[in-house]
Each structure stands twice: as C-alpha cells, then as structure tokens.
Amino acid sequence: MDALTTLTSRTVVLPIRDIDTDQIIPARFLTTTSREGLGAALFHDLRFDQHGAEREDFPLNDPDARDCRILVAGNNFGCGSSREHAPWALLDYGFRAVISTEFADIFQNNAFKNGLLPIIVDVDTHNWLLAHPGVELRVDVEAAQLELPDGGSVEYPIDAFARYCLTQGIDQLGYLQKHSDAISSYEETHACGG
Image 1 (cartoon, rainbow, N blue to C red):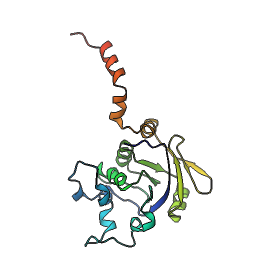
Image 2: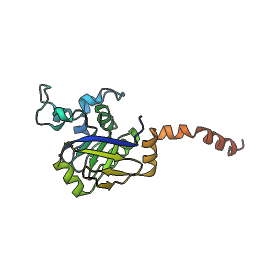
Image 3: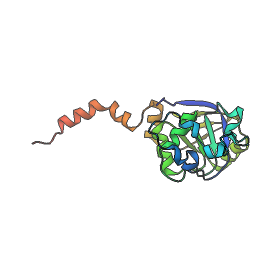
Image 4: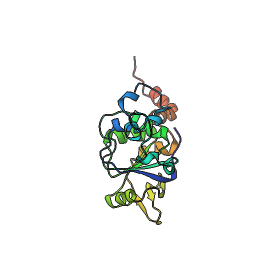
C-alpha cells in the first residue's frame, strides 16, 4: 500500500445518494481474491449499458475524469454489505480519496484499512463540490485538511491510528509487523511459567 500524505487532484462528481457496495462493485465480480483488475468493474452497472458500451452520461466515462484521483460522491456512500472489494475497486481504478457528508461505518473502516481516504465534509462544502465538478483540490492527510480552490480549507475527521497508517503506507498487520521486535521482547519478559 502506498503512503498517502498529500494528494492534489481534480475531482469527478457522482451526485447519487445511497450508493451501496453492490453498485460500487457488483456481486458477480467478487469471485477473485486479487485486487488487480477490479477497477474495470467499478460502478459497472452504472458505467455500462447491457451491451457493455460506456454510458455517455455517466461521470466516470467523461474523458476529463479519467485521471481524477478524488471522487465526490452523494450522501451515505458505501452503504449495504461489508465487501472489502468496494475500496479495492476504487483504488484499482485510481481513486485515493472519496468525499461525502456520510459514509457507512463498515465501508469507511475498510477504506482506511486499504489506503483509501474517506473524507467527511459539511453540507455547504459538499454542495459546492457537487456543483463544481473537475475543480482541483489538495488533501493534507497529516493536517486533516481539504484545501479548496479559493484558498480556503476545511478540516475533516480522521482517527489518529488511521492517519498514521495512511501516512506510513501500512495496514493494521503492517503496523504490528513494524513493532514485532517490541512484541517479541514483551512476550519474552511476560511469559507464563510452565
């Protein structure tokens, strides 16, 4: 997992509320345990018609959206089942951050664990971002700030452990492995007598 300390990107806007994990990555694409290639199925049933052709009116199919790394989504993003494939698909497609006013708890936790930054903003900021697709934003993970094009910024909530893992490019297992010497030392000095 790549470290995420700052991110500067244009946005792509998906102004649909209550996008669930089955819309993010439909269940028929969950037969893999690999993360690679899942981006091709991201929002599959919204992006493509029944013949597999791109829907011209879907925001991710706009050529200007192809290199955007920040998705501005509608309210309550990531609701539904707890599939880890949802953040995998978003990351494989190229996104590193998703902005909304609300995320489903399980999706939010899975996002953090996999290196995807879920950013919760206030309603006014969210409405402005929805109305201005393609603006360039700068995300400062350490400061937990989203810098807007007008020079202003808004803070967003982020757990200290999640921030640490994102900025170090590690997940929970990587965190434990980073402290394996200290864990081994503790186990040796606190071993139960036989």
